[in-house]
Length: 181
Image 1: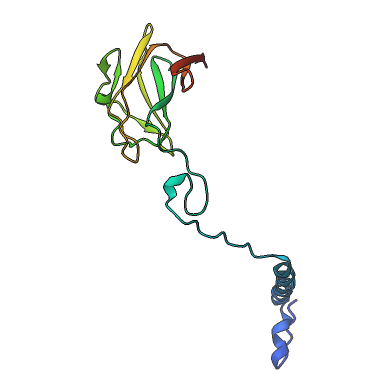
Image 2: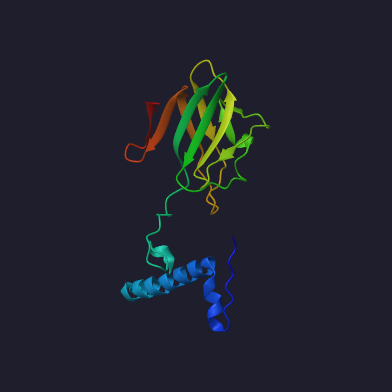
């Protein structure tokens, strides 16, 4: 049974249950919105720093990583997956993905096949590729790669690599250290 109430004038708007619900939520929003806006304090803005950001901080005062060091490889992960090896190379800065080519990476002094596909991490600090499985220890040589800001990497050669291992470069010892996965 449908009952319709016809009110004349300005109070006719309040008769619908849906409109009453909307009105209720609008009043609640206004009440609580005013309550929370009184208690919220505006954040003071930091004063902008004077000087160039190359002194270890950007203009907002946040620390920047040290970019005075050379662009280099800092880690190497080798995983065995069936008949292939997945090799991941980690860098200390984002790598220019256009400089990573098969002719710049050598396994046992032989360049990678030209059709080698390279995958990159989102921040470009790592690249990954696959190669056929090696029967014994092998060496990896990386040359002529550039960082995202244009620094040229010194040639890097890592010897006595094997499947399912991780190597990282130790700055203190100035040598590559191996560990298993």
